[in-house]
Amino acid sequence: MLLTARPLDTHTPRGERIAAARAALARGDGTAVARFAGAILAERGDDAEALFLHGLADAAAGRVATAIRLIEQAVARCPAGEYRAQLARLYVAVRRDGDAAAVLTAAEAALPDDALGRDTMGCVYARLGDHAASLPHFDAAVALAPDHVGYRYNQAAALGFLGRTDAAEAAIEALLERVPDDARAHHLLAGLRKQTAGRHHIDRLTTIRSRARDDRSRVLLGYALAKELDDLGRGADALDTLCTTNAAHRATLRYDVADDLAIFDAIRAAWPAMASAPVTAPAADAPIFVIGMPRTGTTLVDRILSSHPAVESAGELQAMPLAVKAATGTRSRQVLDVETIQAAASADLGAIGRDYLRRARHHRRDPAHRFVDKFPGNFHYVGAIARALPQARIVCLRRHPMDTVLGNFRNLFAIGSRYYDYSYDLADIARYYVGFDRLMTLWRTALPGRVLELRYEDLVADQEGETRRLLDHCELPWSDACLAFHDNSAPVSTPSAAQVRRPIYRDAVARWKRHADILEPALRILEEAGIAID
Image (tube, rainbow, N blue to C red; front, top):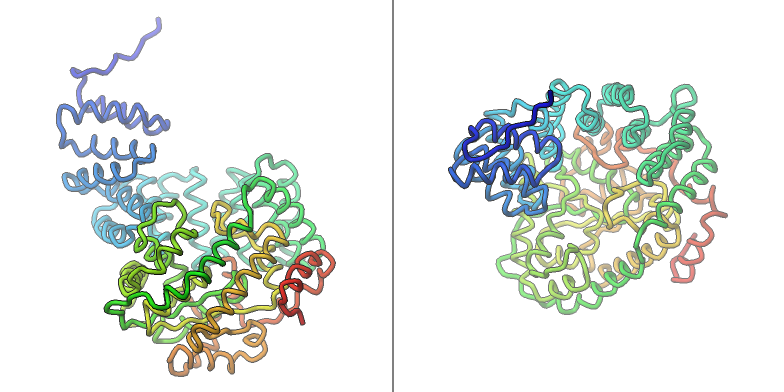
């Protein structure tokens, strides 16, 4: 005899309706969650659990502002760790980093007892740049739900960021025992260290890549395989793998490099107005901005600076782009676009500087230290930085144009970020470089002395001399610790993590010459733009 579940109605005990809502949440049925939770709230509008569950349903449906309001009410009535963890996640999603940090601090006093809650706390800490704080939560999530692949991946990534390479490798292998074809895990594993002839994963990667069915997996596995081939001295095979991988992925993107070039043009056109825009009550703080094209040594310089006893790294912040966007009030979805650039030209730059410092504060550890913001893309905002923060120091990394093009092509950034869509095609990268170079020419002439352009090749050839020049520009006294940057134990969460834990090496200088034939189209674009290739 078949039994049917009793339908839920107003006579159903609250506990059964909450259980039904939780079950619906577990299977991803947000509509049912909202229905069950809404029925309870219609009778008792202050029910914390119903407020929380309805908030999660709204968040899943994209109604984040409503979700935050509901979960804030839930936390006010019952400050459970689970509630606070999810509220912190939503705060970060809307860039309310300070509120997220405060909620995390409160949650530490009453931790969630579920794996999702602990993993969520770890993810929020990671988003705030505090990887050391994230790891205990990822460890707890894995202990509570050992078969959950996502929790294991987050744990392994945190271990890698903290330089605990052996532990990270063990965590990834434990993940791969459960899901052998997990592309993210293979990509993370390949990047943890330089592979050797006696210790690599090329055969396994080749096999798994051959059976990958979705574009994201093919990209991750292609980059992982190329990286390991290159580590073993098989540079031609590595670049061949990348060319195939990137061409296939580029074909899936709706990207036109002309859109990025229009942004470069708009910044140059807007500068005269910005140069005379008001600057009310400019802040006296002196942050250090490390900018440049990616893969040009920005992480290395950040590491050198943050090895100084008076300096800390705040990581790659979005604080300046967000401060500019907020000041303009433009409604476009993009943080940086032509409309926003034009509006920023007449904004109050003093207010932008103060807002930037407020946003950056939540990523700092010691307010007594100077801090480094090493978001490379801040080269778009040099004019705003120079005027909004008169005491700020700006360092731009320059690298041989062709090595810059190759470096951007060889390294996978954030697949989901449209900011890096230019990096999958050599011609796109070359044209993007031309736009960058012209913008730096503007800053060099319009703001003499404000930007130190530091050549990667010079730093490699004369580490001490260039480090002294760097510290002088940043108005920092000499410290021998800056020469031993590879001993810096701070976390690194960029593609350069393994490299900056080694002393300076020269392997990457003039790498492009080994692949001159493949890079010929990019070379022609640079030469036609008048960029010297020596």
